[in-house]
Length: 214
Image 1: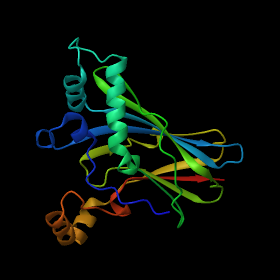
Image 2 (image 1 turned 45 degrees about the vertical axis):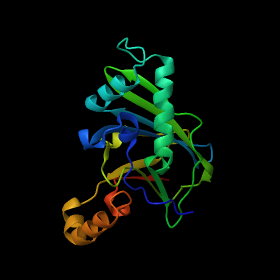
Image 3 (image 1 turned 60 degrees about the horizontal axis):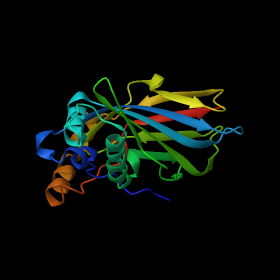
Image 4 (image 1 turned 135 degrees about the horizontal axis):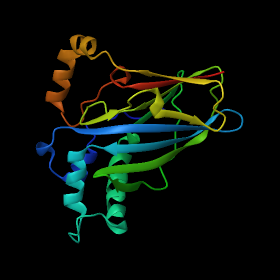
């Protein structure tokens, strides 16, 4: 089924609680695509590293005992908050296989760590049924199209294909923002003035990972 458009998603609003203070959050995203023995995709494993400013906000808001670090229970609270927030926006994940929109199950848990003064988040999305991709183009996006959260997939090395990953190649397709703004500036302005919290952008605005396997 078609997943709902990701709208003005704000993980950081739920965590830091002050949208006006920080207009952007930057996340370095890594993705592992797991295939079964037949070559079908069965799981998407996410690893997100948040920027220093956001991470310091998390420390400030979740270090309940004030000891300058996040212990297990405090990290658990961060994970619950993040999990609840991103669940509303399909975990910033879109999957396309031709005209199909393969669906996935919510993660069993969102795990959090705090390493080198940065928040790390780990979670896994298992596909509801295996997605055969041999000879087909699979497209996966990890994006917030409203750009409250800037999800950066640095390059193809940030994407791994495991399991039966032989014969696969990946390519990162990034939006041509100059063209998109020129073509849609009036529509975007009308959307945001009419309903800024629910203004949404289409697939052309997302960064896509294209995966092709022999």
